[in-house]
Amino acid sequence: MSKGDFDGQVVIVTGASTGLGRAIAEEVAGRGAQAVVINYARSAEEAQETARRVEARGAQAILCQGDVGEDADCRKIADAAAPFGRVDALFNNAGTTTFAPNHADMDAVSMDDFLRIYRVNVGGSFQMIRAARTLLESAPAPGAVVNTASIAGITGIGTSVPYAASKGALCTMTRSLARALAPKIRVNAICPGFIDTPWFDRVSNNTANVEKLREAVSRTTPLQVASSAEDIAAATVFLASPASRHITGETLLADAGTHLGAVSNRAMQQQ
Picture (tube, rainbow, N blue to C red):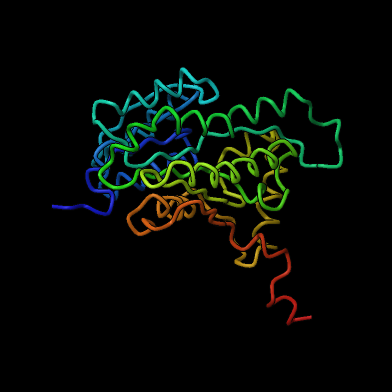
């Protein structure tokens, strides 16, 4: 009996030990995926918890450590799905940043920051698609790639200038590869705004700053919410589902309306 729209599918999720990556892995497992390759860079214990949750939802969990900034590791991650003979969906979710939110302070970031962030956020996604290309093309329906970009790549806001620039580059690469890899592979990007996960605590090293950010997001976004990983996972998985089978080269903003500006129509009407 079919369990859902990912019934029997083989899925790879990079950066899946916590946060959005974990939520994506759980979402596809709950929707019938046969197997989920769970990539992580360092957090083995947290990745094992993701695996436990995936298996509790009925899918086979395959743990694979690797840094997507390294091409050899990307090939290892793709090889973890090779026994199944195909990959139906690849979620390029692994990412990194440096915390320098004052974009006017140009001395707060270095060229090393740019290169490190681009290596993972842009190069890592490219290398993962390249490594998994044959398996994606072997899927019964066009293989689906979903790149985790950001509202930062659309508006230039975000944790740092290199981060925003890398996510803008990822959006451009999404369109380039959607054109180049069609019709056998679809490539789309999800652009979240703030996601309330432990990731922000780690990159900022300041819980008070994150709490202020959480409050500001809830107060100023049109929907007046700080999105959870589960909120964004549903939108992300849509881009790999049969419901989006005629969508490629698209960037979907899932930001509670952040791109519309901080003042909602309702607030203006009250003035």
